[in-house]
Length: 432
Image (cartoon, rainbow, N blue to C red):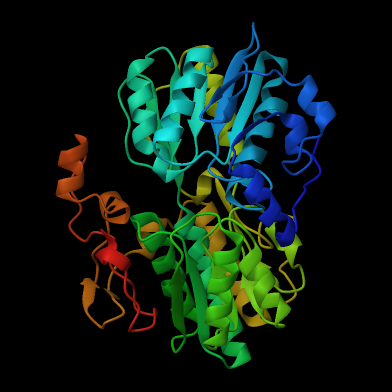
């Protein structure tokens, strides 16, 4: 059964953010109301224990219990919403043998470690942690609880027994989004695109570079502006960053943060936005949303949990490309129709390129094959050279040594901005 998608308008997200500061647990009932739970529903939920003001849910005896730790509220319309859709997919795919629970708006750092540890102590069989800043906390707790499975999304740490990392090649879809944004900006005569960037880490830099490279394919004269907001979820900062770039002349805003607020900001001016994370994100501004590079976590999550239940799952560095189905581009997948604002002349190119990606004929490594220049005019990736996975993740020798990773260090580490970014754009802290 397909569940009805629920997105919370941006003004409600502000209220939700204030509530989320106290932390909270959730059940499926909360998920279907966009993260709001009535007093009656709360009374019916297991009380659990509190950890730093965050209510820890109870596992269900006789079932395989899976817990999810979220950095934002499930009603964010983006990153956390998409992960929660994956959680619901597990329940539908695996049925009564599985019980899932979640905790939303859990701060990264010490709070996350306490929460993850309490979930393990409670008896959850598997714990998925879904933000980069949960990596060290997940690693620490995994070592303490060798009989519990742990999967961390977006990091680079693992062990050989019970702890894996998981991510997907969202750069594939961001490259296509850049093509669409470039074509739209060119058609508008602005030749300027904006990028809302959460943090100066390799993941965000890599996705931004993919946007820039795709944009230059359809609009060589276009430039990509950027605003660093140093948060994954803050509706005010996301909207302010978008408005700043709109004021600077951008006609398309691409967000890398968790809400569709930047798309709404563009739409309010009659301009264009490209949302992120959830296939439903265009619902927030349907007439002005060009597309959404989105995550499809459900099949991978269900496959992992099924293997865990069977005792066959093995931890690894899991990084899936587009042919796995873990990522998609709204309006261009099977059965979908491009959004009205997408220029007609770019549609065949996007479809052709996407088709190659879905067939495994084009991967993230093809996107990052030289020659590639940076935004200062320096040749970063020579002709014919392809970046390695360690290059894409920015895993330099110091990081590998400090974390005891069995990886080769990057040589062209992802700490530069590609040609297409405005020349004066910088990575705060040099991308370290």
